[in-house]
Image (cartoon, rainbow, N blue to C red; front, side, top):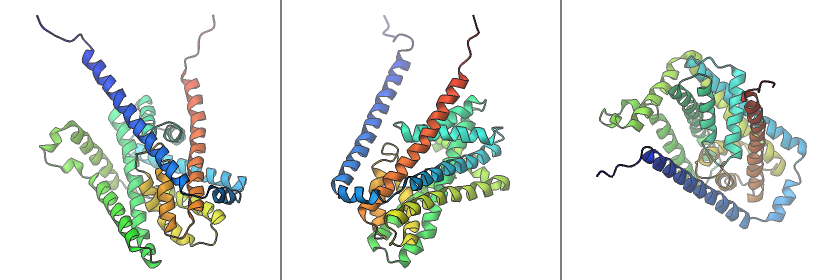
Length: 333
């Protein structure tokens, strides 16, 4: 008598295991966000935070939200260039719409990669292959992060010029160098020894590396991809400086601008919910190197997070409208 499992048992067990892992990972990220936020607020003078926040006008906050909305459109444009490189006939406006939906999943749902999954899913629904859908999204992410690390390197001499503390320079150097090496390595995973490429994960990553590297030889793609990536990060710097000019106008804004890329780079660690907690901690520590009070840095960080959430809310409305259009209309009885 054999002890064979009923058909589908393994699939159910695997699915249950994945759900359990996702729940545990979500709980861990929630704990990180809540814990860091509690620590940040515990150490600050909340009365001073409130007093400084009153200096901000509604028009200023709306301007920052507009900056991040335009940034999302520019990032969508970069992704559209990559889609065009892969000969995927998706319109620019469609790419913007999908990117806004991705912003909703990133900012307002408990996930740090949900936006990328949503983007890949919608591209797949438009008739593209699964591999091409995923590769275009990941290539877009790689180029964005690579240019962010590049800006951190370019601005490093400014930190030295203004005599930032040596231990901070070491941290910035290690983080920037490590990120740059990892991102450049992502371009060459297909050149790993053949015995390593037997693993399915390595094989898929090799395909991603080959496709991402191929963009560099396409002049119609690589120039706009790099240029638009720089513009995306310029919007982050602009939004940060606009807020700092309101809450800490007497400080060195050039030094602050030089710190923003490495602060953003460190804030992208996917260990919290939509970056909350990590962004505030890194922003307070990073801007303190330019003499920005902790209370002012917290206000800037929170307003950046809320502005991104506002853009995500626009994406949520777009998502709802998209779902209503996708529903089949019932024929009249």
